[in-house]
Length: 181
Image (cartoon, rainbow, N blue to C red):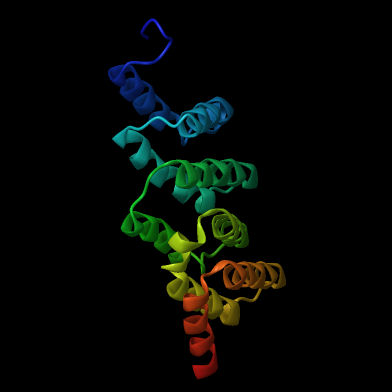
């Protein structure tokens, strides 16, 4: 730590590596996730943090405990909102969420839909609009295949948010797709 109380890059890397090894340990989850959240909110720019977010992203869908899913969702959304991304990277993150719309367990589908809903609300519409067609089609297909009324309701909410936030030029394209069905 330097005189201003800032961690040096090699200390950040060591801390991230230690935290990464603790992510799957349910005995230390509270402290581990609090440190990750603080690092994301700071934001600390380090390649290891990006690779750690892949683990966090998986856990927000696949962890068996809803409270861990919620914590991971909060961290992941904060990461996506606070870190600079090009449109391709953003699409990669969205693609992960869309590819899990048919995840086996309802709690995982719920968590990823809450993530998508939050992103639709908070990411600038010009960024989100560029992926709107893919998102819209994926959500509509998931809606038609979903058995859970709770998840169908949440899918409807995300579709509604998307249609309200998307740029008008993209909205016309989405309506056109709908009328073709």
